[in-house]
Amino acid sequence: MSALALGASTAPASLRVLVLCTALSPPQLTSVLTSLKDSSKKAGSHKTRELLWKAYGDMLTWAGGGDGTIDAFLMFKAGEDVNEGKLQIQELTKRQRGCCGSLDILGRKHTPAGEEEGKCRGWAMVWTEDEASSAFEDLLDGEPCIYCTGDKVYVGTRYKRVMCKGISSVKTVKDVDALVPTLLPDNPLRSVSFTSNSPPSINSYNFILAGPWTSKFVEDSENCCSATSTDAVYDCFLACKASSLMADANKLIAQMITDVEKGLTACIYAASMKEAGVARRNALMKKVYVHESKAKFIQGAKEDGGIEVNVVNGNIEGSKFSEFGGIVFEIHYRTDLAMFG
Image 1 (cartoon, helix red, strand yellow):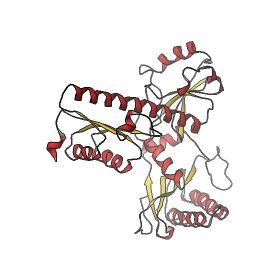
Image 2 (cartoon, one colour):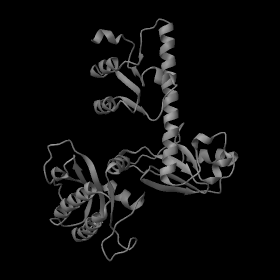
Image 3 (cartoon, one colour):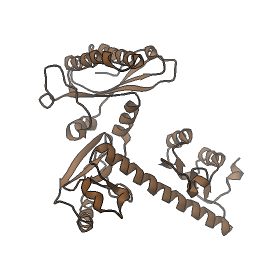
Image 4 (tube, rainbow, N blue to C red):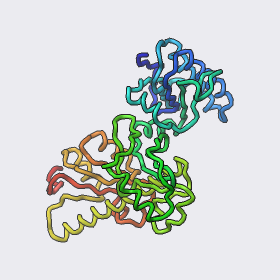
């Protein structure tokens, strides 16, 4: 089916309803969407009911005009007035279609009326409001972690995962030390990427031990999670990543201070958003560590391309990184940015 947009929007729009559909015929998708639209009458608020009724209605109109097999993201974007919302269709690539069959996509899979999940090859999954955007970003761009549940090793994000291997029960630090070499690049894991075959490798923050058995690893508690749910594991991973990035940012700041004390021309700058803007405009910025609160800058730096953008999430109070305004960056060569305006 070809891409189609319904409706027009003059207000700022965001992704409000996301449906991931795979291997369904138009009549099957129509059955799923009809059921979802009917169930939207039970939504807790009038605004939510109005949103879902409009979104599923537009999706039904689109599905009714198609033929063949539908594999696509159905995205309803709207501002405050849902009646001005717009439906966008993004067809799945060959790789994404394969991922829907080979990965465990977390959440309820909706199947056509009268067809049980597991017996119907196709299905649809739904995310709404804030979860719609986070699910879409996670599925397409989420950074994976590697986690061990004691007898299995998984690669996953918050909304998708794949089991890579079964292992003998891991119970001690010695067992973990023996396991890690089997997860290194010489023994590649599986990829959960929707965009490329990119198996992750263990780094300083992405290996998580998950399950009640981890309570014995007191010294390494930061990368230990007492639960095995993907939400809990991924929250643990994000905390480990934030801690690691904070440490890297503080090291960069320490190097900047050392350079200043030695009287060297700067190649590391911190605290000034004005200087960061100058570095970006003149294509001088090499990498940056920036707090999540500076969302506009982060978006712009990512759109620029060619910059290693490291976003530090969470509370940074009491850190050198916080003292220097939540931003530190390195440029390609030593120069005084004041010369660039």
